[in-house]
Length: 394
Image (cartoon, rainbow, N blue to C red; front, side, top):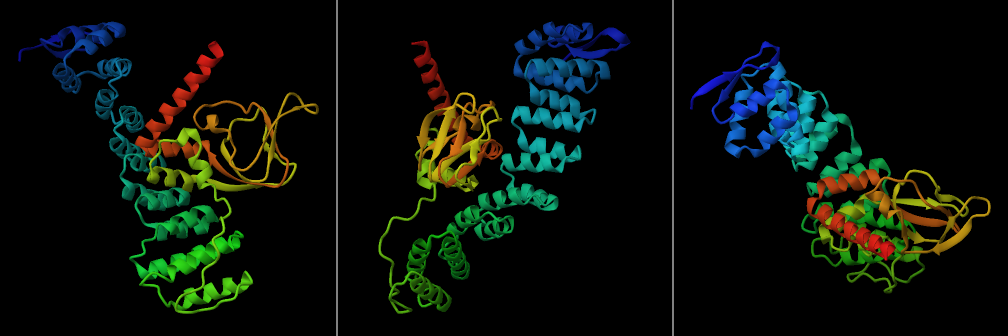
C-alpha cells in the first residue's frame, strides 16, 4: 500500500496510507471534531491501520489521536496508543472503559496500584490472581469473597470468623460438601455453635440430627455429644442413640433469606446469585428509640427488617408526622443501592430491631462481579422507575 506523509502543525510529520490520509490531515490540523467524524466512518480494518501508524507518529500527534479516540469511544484503541508512552494508570482506566478487565488489571499492576489490580482481576474472573493480591494487601473481606466464589467454603468461613461476621461464616459453612467427611463434621459443629449462640438452638438441633443420619457421620461421637447437650439445653428427653432424637418441627426464626428473596428488585435472580447476595448482607441491631435512617443523610443501602418495628416519619422535628410503621419482612432504602441521593424520611426504632443491611458499596461490587444478575436487577429497576414516572404523569 502506497504511503505518503502529511505536514502537521508544530513541524511534525505523520505517516499516512491512502485510505487514512484525510484522517491524519485532520489530526495534523488539530480539528478534533472533524477527525472524530472521519475516524467513526472508517472501516474496522482502516481503524486498525490508523492504530498501527500511530506508533510512528510524534508525541503531539499521538496526544491528539488519543483525544480523538476518547471522543469516538474507541477506548481500547486509545489504550493501545498510550501503551507506547507507558502511561499505565491512564491505560488501565481506558481498558476498564472498554471492558477489558484483565488487561486493565495488568496495567494497574504496572502503575503500582495493586488494590485496583486485584479488583479488576476479580471482576474479570481471574479469582486466583485477585486472591493472591488481596492476601498480600491483607484485604480480608475481599479474600473471603474470592474464596467463596472459588468454592473454598472452609477457608472463606475461617476468614469471616476472624472478621467477626457470623452471618457470612454460617452461609459459607452451609456450602461444605457432605462428601468430605472431616470438613463436613467440623462445619456442622461450627454451624451448630453459631446457631445456638444466636438463640436458634432448635435449628442447631435439627442440623445435628440430620448430619447424624449421613452415612459418613453416623455415630460420630462429637456430633452426638453436641446433640445431647442441645437436648438437655432445650429440656427435651433424649440422648445419644443409633437414631438420634429430632426436634419437633417448629418454624425457625427468620434469617432474612426469604425476606430478601421477596424484594421485587431481586425477583429474577438465580439461586446461586441470590445466595451470593444474601452472603453480602450484614446483621445489624437497633435499640428502641434509636435512629435507623437519618433524614438528609446520604443513602446507605438496603435494610431488611427481621424482628421488631420501625416508624417512618416525615416533616421537620419535633412535630414530624408518622407516615408508616413497618415490621418484619419490610425493607427500606433499596433505591439507594443504585442511585445516589439523600434519605428522604426519618426512620426510628419503635422497638428493639434486628435487621440485615446490604451497603451500597457491597452491592455495587456485587453488580460488577455478577453480570447476569446485574442485567436483571437494572432492568427491573428501570421498569419500576418508568412505572412511577408514568403514574406521576397521569
